[in-house]
Length: 191
Image (tube, rainbow, N blue to C red; front, side, top):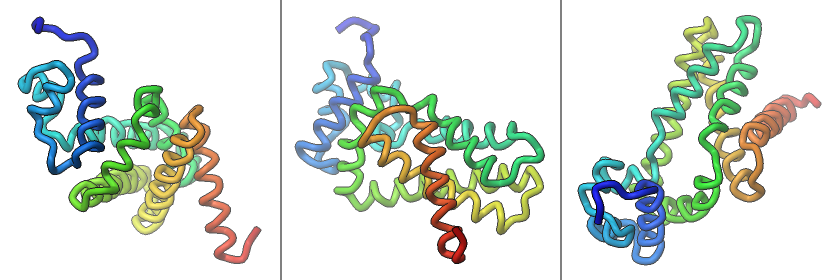
C-alpha cells in the first residue's frame, strides 16, 4: 500500500457499515474495517477516533452550521424562523455519499443499545446548541428550548424523508418543520 490512498475515508465508512451489518457492531474490530477497506489500522485512526465515529462523525460541524445560521438570521425573525435557517444550513452536508449509506447506518444504530443511546445524545447536543444560540439572540429560555426541540423533531423526520426520496435536504427540512408547526397548531385546536 502506498502512503496516500485515494478516498480512504469513504472506503473506511463503506467497509465499516458492511461489516457492522454482516457481523454486528460489537463484533467488528477496527483492524477488520481497515483490512476490508484495503488500508492500515493507522489510516483508520487518522480519520476516526474510534469505530463509533464512523457512524457519528461530523456532529461538531453540524452543530456549528446550526448555531451559525441561527446567529445570522435577521433580528426580527422569530425563533422558529431561526431554527428553520439552522436546519436548511445543514443541507451542505447531505450529499450523495451520505444518502447512499444512510439507511444502512440507521439500521446498524437501531440494532445496538449503545449506539441508540449515542444517537439520542447527539440529538440532545444539537438541541442544546440551538437553544443556546436562540438564547444568545434574546429568546427566553423556555421558548428557546421548545423551538430547538421542535427543530430536532423536524430534523429527524426530515432526515428519514430525505433517505426515502433523496433531493434537497434543506427543502425537505423546511417542509418538515412546516408540518411540525401545523401539528403544534392542531394540538391547540387551531388550523
